[in-house]
Length: 456
Image (cartoon, rainbow, N blue to C red; front, side, top):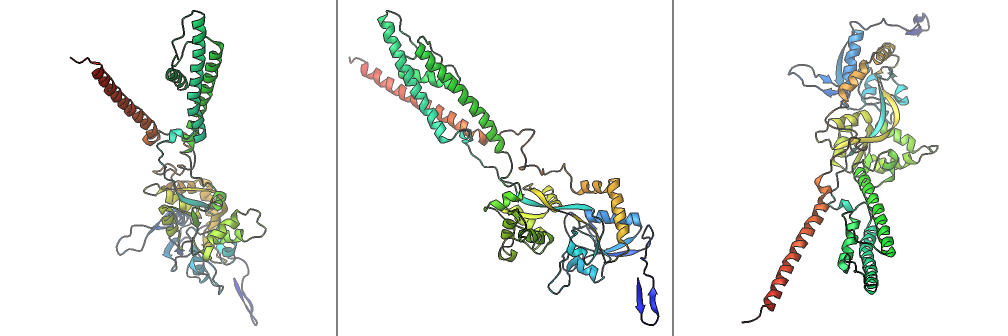
């Protein structure tokens, strides 16, 4: 703004230099870092300068068109966003701005207090939060899932109840037959043998008939109790089976950061020395933090100074999450894009979106362009242009469904063959057993007929 000379005094004005409503005719140097879908390399023409595409590039183009400036863009030499080093200098895009090699920096760069102390930021053009990228659980095949609604003890009691009730009915039927014989009345024919009594009980249990002539009060009490028992068991089984099949199609047991911190089967981490890494460090080491979730998360993330579970860049973390048994903690917009564009739709995004911050355009400290950029960003937000750009890069109706394996299916889902494999196995076993018994009966009857044939 001005300089001070001991002889001439103040040289210049302390009033802030204000620009007009545009930057017409200016060419700005822009530094960036590749981060899908914010900044990506476009298909380049041989001999032409490298071209870029992405959400941040679309925002920059909209601002350039609105303000009338041109720009030259290049990548940060070290490919980093910007972190303060031990010698108090900064690397990455922040270092490029401090050293005045660039006028502004744009990518998925978050607004943090540490960065705002050395550079200026525009108003946020997109909200920022942390999500969890995790591989979708593979569907477990259990051909005997039809037995899942009841545990083994319940099935054992049901299996034991059928012959017990059958024996009781057989005994009561024999008593009734003796009484009928003494009274010179015709004896009941149904359930006269033990196996027929058990068959009647089994038929009533599977709700396929099995009725018999019930004359005595005791028999009526037994059959009435058995029918009521059968009604309750079948209703409970049907309801529990429907619930079991619904739960089996629901999400991963890990839904939130709390769930992630309480389990030990899946490792998790983030990018070393990133804003997310520093966030978990600050929350996990804060003695005033009441929620011990962050302490547990930081204990795993910082294991061996981050060498065990953390990665060097987001692309590595996404690849590691796709392989399975690893959860990548990163910006929810980045991991959502990775899930939406995954060829196999094998990953999903979960989490309760912690660390709500924002993305902004970084400029040199004291830059006269800051207010202009902030004003135009607010205008883009109010006009809905930013929402249109977001829908372009994060389509909600894409090939991959972000809600898959995270919420119950609201429109139903067809049962697959393996869900009924156990039913077909039972049917096949019954048919084979029937054929075997029929063969044995045929063999037995043929031998009896052969033995009873008189010799000539």
